Length: 109
Image (tube, rainbow, N blue to C red; front, side, top):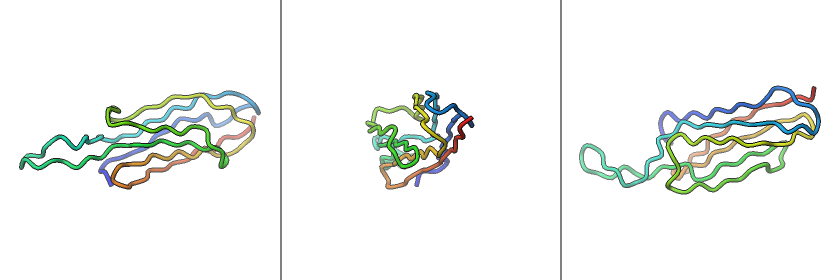
């Protein structure tokens, strides 16, 4: 598991049924390419976020495959329609097998 990884998301607390909302996500992650060397000349193992998935009440909203050229601390902003109250689940997958998750609930106003 990479050190200092912190997922952050911004989801409105409420929305009208059927409203389109904007969701912002950022995960703090160094994104090691596997090509850099440490001070002793050894290669630092590759560790990048390779997939990002968002579900709402068990339904997939977004599923992104990330390539090695992705920047440090990947940021995503996207729109989603909120049909009813529920919970967004955010999942990031790391090359080293680590999985980072967080969730946010939204109410219908």
